[in-house]
Image (cartoon, rainbow, N blue to C red; front, side, top):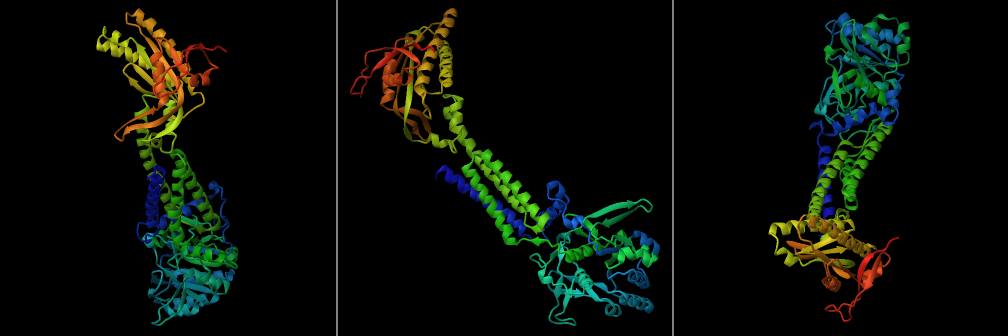
Length: 624
């Protein structure tokens, strides 16, 4: 399989695995791993509400503008110290009397009155109060998202006097209150068969608005819950009593203690209660009526129900995207990013993936903050980044292997620039495939004259030391002019100019390199003479023409080289060159005549060539 196709297939497979990881977390029941399932994602989105101004989204209306029709009467710690608990029902009667006189439109008790008082007069007084102002009572309904498990209605005398009753459903998957259904239809049997029951907040808002809440228009999650938009809660310590006090910012009429509501006059309560929906319930720490929300922590249950009412009154609903969309995004976005790793180099692809993740996060959070449209972010981002990391690791390992192959094969023979150029290929191994390509190249040969006789008078160690010094200097010049050292054949150097890619100045570079080599050899000989070492001269031959270039050999042992008639011509020319001479062919001279001075030579007979090859001896480089 071609390298690019193989990379695409591997990238797609890794993306699918990453998408499956994200999708599996989305599909988890809310009761399983709340720190990693959809509850965690909802908490992330809610947290974005607090950072909305910093993100450039502005402060959302549902956090910025309190509801001017809502007020809260709290049974706080100070009230408990003054009145004790439970309060006598005559105290609630007094509260209703004061609120009615102050002009309250509806009063909703987030308190369960499930048993008759020992003193019937207390219930009678409370019942009279309930009739003075439209009031709503709460009762417990232990239920899942569908189907009744059990219910216990308020005291009949009180239920008859109330304008409505509403259930408080206990539904905290994974320990979090994420929402609750606003309506439940009772089963087909029992005393209240097929009765439609409304949640306490829905019953309160319906009574306040003098109409039944149309729950079919309320967006819900797949389990039928209207999702809670957790309110901002402030906690501070009362210095006088050393107790923690929680206050909220969404009820525009504010929060007053029940003890103060009992002692204040109707005139004092008028601004607070007139025309408002007032919720009454517990915020005292000792009463333990608290719920843990996603993103904004533990808050009183009273604030939860009041917030539900606020959402119903102002239409601030969280719109959860279908699970199918979330799961589709978990697979689709990573798959799209996989293409980046096919068409881009790894660093650019990683940068593109990170940029895509940031853009998705921005758009996703903006949709939630501005439109309350909840599309999964945490798990889609997880799939995108996990897949990117996996594919990047695969690419880096694969590219590392290819780079090592190129470096091992070329690193000691060509200039670093050529190695870098080869490595720019999507798959550098394609440049090293076991096949040839026809290219125009300039082939260079050099040979030490009299080397055999010289080596007979030297120790092997001295021969190798002097040769290595010579080869080091020659290779450096070849590299500096873009050449590729093909091989060393004893004391002979073969180099190619145009490896692996042809450039217009190959012939010129080869000739200039040869001239510089001869100058360097003269410098070396002068130093060797002073050191008492033998001197030698070098003959060089250069030819330009079409050759076959590529990896030659077996899969286990390859040599990147050139072959063909024009290689033989270069070999023939260097064989004719005397020590210190550079012999070039007519084709080479044609491409560098503007930079060299030459003297014609007798045409050269070359095996396999029908006509002799014109040749020239380079005498010097032209001066500008």
